Image (tube, rainbow, N blue to C red; front, side, top):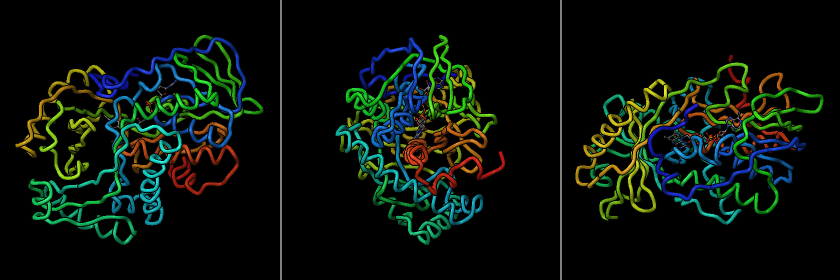
Length: 404
Ligand SMILES: Cc1cc2nc3c(=O)[nH]c(=O)nc-3n(C[C@H](O)[C@H](O)[C@H](O)COP(=O)(O)OP(=O)(O)OC[C@H]3O[C@@H](n4cnc5c(N)ncnc54)[C@H](O)[C@@H]3O)c2cc1C
């Protein structure tokens, strides 16, 4: 599957993690992680920290799947507003899911503190802006639901938004708990750390093309016919995990992003906050540590790479135009544009844990706009399950939560 088109900023910005080590023999290990994106990296961090012997396999160059295309904003807000999530899964589960995401931002931060590497992790606030009257009404209900749930949130009036951001919006929600990072750098930093400490074996350019269950776990077979015998396998294969699942659990979409030339700092808005709109298709924006602006959105309900490639130029122009309408005084010049595969689940929540009747195969599927915070949760839950420690989040995000 083509996971992105165009020029994802992060693989242009960072030196390629140029690691080439295809598996060339049969091996045996305790746990195999399939996928070297941010999910596989966070799972590797958790398992190595717990002392679980593991190897990680990827068919691509390390970290160059969706992780390289991510705009990498970390927020506690799930794609589905809390008021709607309560309708879908009930009040307790919805609030728990939101709180898990809030906690996982700090947990991601702590991973990088633990390995003493900084993937340009930056704490920033979030503004969610009402694009129209419907959005204003939604934000009023959403504010109350989040406040009642004890989540950090402030309601902002039209005038407050004008004063703080200098833009027109009917209302907004604000919180100071979000963050942003360079996700590609983050994934490669983690993997490099454990590789150098000899706590992780890493095999790139190795496609797992088949598998079968054994008495004590799994036998994985690579494209070249090598076998890997293991007790557990963690599927951190992102949007390509479908081949390990008996049934489809998400829809694949396309999403688009552009990044500007660096701009003078004086042009950037207050606190370099993340900005989102309630409108569909939504528009969102963030800054980078070299004062570029990333603008994303314009999602389409298709994942045909050809169609996506053809749409990219127009989509980039629309994103730039929408940004300039919001901030006409910022001299925004698009430097690069790209598109990526994206996905959504029916309730906006990830799928984490084992699939019914597939013991020892753990899925870490952080689908949706909170992919990275979900990956962090998945890493912790799966780590706990593998060492036999119960984790209540397994039920909240598990496959049994809804009819498949
Ligand atoms: C444009 C864009 C913007 C986004 N913005 C945000 C955001 O702001 N915040 C957020 O939290 N999330 C965001 N996301 C989502 C987030 O980026 C993803 O959830 C995350 O990158 C997924 O990481 P992953 O490691 O699960 O998948 P990937 O990075 O795709 O890694 C999976 C890896 O598995 C490997 N693999 C698959 N199958 C096999 C196999 N059979 N054998 C061997 N290897 C295999 C692949 O080669 C791949 O490298 C965004 C995504 C896009 C595209």
